[in-house]
Amino acid sequence: MASEESPDEALLARVATEPEAFEAFYRRYVALVTGYFVRRTRSGELAADLTAETFASVFESVDRFDAELGSARAWLFGIAHHRLLESLRKGQVETRARRRLGLPRIELTDADIERIEASGSSIDVAALLGELPEDQRAAIVDHVIGERPYDEIASGLRCSEAVVRQRVSRGLRALRQRLEGAP
Image (cartoon, rainbow, N blue to C red; front, side, top):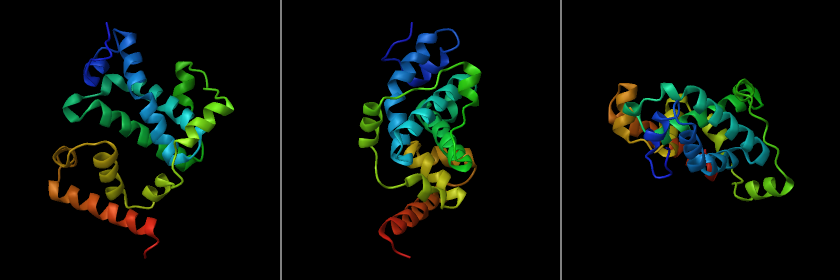
């Protein structure tokens, strides 16, 4: 039986045989993922749709999760980031995965949307990240958002830790300059 105290990786490993393991993983991260999207989209409704898409994708691809490549949390936020980028590119939320699974669209009340939007930021971080070169954007997402250590990222990219540190540093410097209005 799935336990709220089980490590994330253990929950994901049991999803195929214990549906409650996915439920526990979902409950553990739904607020964080929704907050991630609210801060980046400034839209409660879009954040709810993207959250549903993210967890539908997690459920569909849980058999491809490999704990040796990184934490379950980093994997989850990697999927969330991918969903966000897809949404930004297409200008709409991708609903194919949700439809394939037969999940209903989440209908929010005005109070729900106000509560979600109240927790968001007025800075469009997703747009700022989208302006960065891909290598810097990916390094920031992996290290800052996904909380992956530099050495783990470097190993996955087959480059040195110094290269990853430099990408994160340059990307954050560029973001800081854009936020401060500096050239």
